[in-house]
Image (cartoon, rainbow, N blue to C red; front, side, top):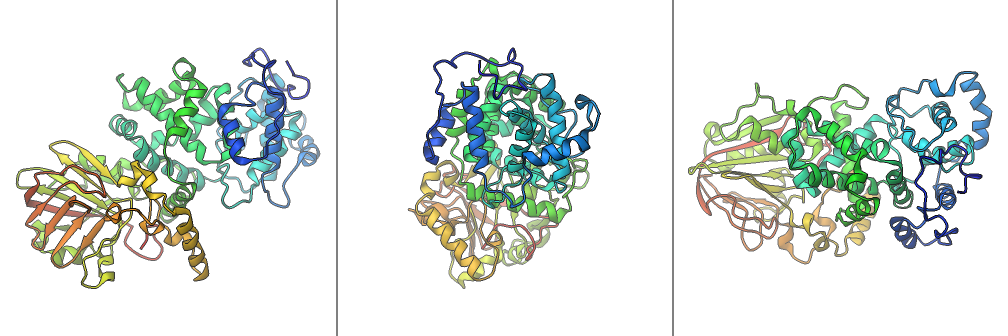
Length: 561
């Protein structure tokens, strides 16, 4: 066992051994694509010394701020900060949870070193206000560091990364909370079975998802978290979402059939992740993670920006007692003639997390405002997004989440034309629940035609006209980013004095006439949906709901024109 150079803080009795004799001793590779493959395959996973050297090289290559604390800074300050205090009982700064400091395979000296390094990080990075992943990262890197000072320098470089397109470690509550919202958005789109279970068994699904980083950096056993860190250093933050989604999928597969109590779901997931070796190997976890067909890093970054803006507007920028999002649909204050409180909460679990922060606000109902399309538009314009609910004379219930202000229909004059974004979806609630999202979410290859080129072109145009690209690019996804092979894949919503249409291409998901009396529904290419109710129907009740505090204005984090 090579414990002389990189094993000072390691308890070798706790480390998995085996395979070191046959494992590679060197890595001669600078090609990113090859590095990706090697990290995913675990090329350096069985050689402790090689992994330490790879980590050192990858971290050294991170672009950082000009003045980034290094090993010599640590040696200068550690004595003054720690003094004669017992390292193992050092109090940690408030931006980490003192109860969640993993020890992994560290020896006694290593356990104390974790606290010393974190204290010195706190001294040198006064802007850090919330960083729950830090103890795990420090503990992990100590296994592969020659001394505390080297570990301190490595962690400092991760924290001081100044590449705007390379997010590594959340360091504020705003960044952390928006990443939880982004994970919730991704779980709702890519883990629909597990997400449905979470909504059913938890009082507040976002409270469950707020643990997503803890699953990776806190609960995973050491031989799993090191494999996570291998790919993270090469590929960045996006792989963390992938791996947490894979954990959620495996939890659903292994535990989904067992009874769960709402107050124990968080604990159940934590226990599953801690004991994951009983059911899932590190290789299977990575295989599952990279089989998930996520949207691009750029789109996820834009979604993160939108979620941060929503939190800022709500004033939720510092850690506080989490507000139960179910209060958004409060049983005492919510009243609909179409859906129950529980049904509305289910719908609320489908919408983008940045809008789930808001209270539902009734904008239009035919029972109060009459069966008139002009009144429908009058009450709905200026609101974005909106939720359309329909109850038919046969007691069927269906609807649509519509991402864009109905006022956008005027941009084409009197011509009926489609607008909206890929966040739109249609659904039915009665007789059974089913949601249909944009077809490209399940088949992203349809949207990859010249996506990168158009994104770059739009970014250049936005910069040239002095506007912030994040204010105009739409998460998940503005169709103008793509030259889609078929226009029917992007027919989201359209309206005129004669009718409104949701979804298009070989049919329409929803069509309502100018009197809001009669409608029809069929399969359409945009959502690849089944008819949402009887194919022709008479409207009994129609309601449109907005999102309180999200009136359409220049400041709001919305989907875009």
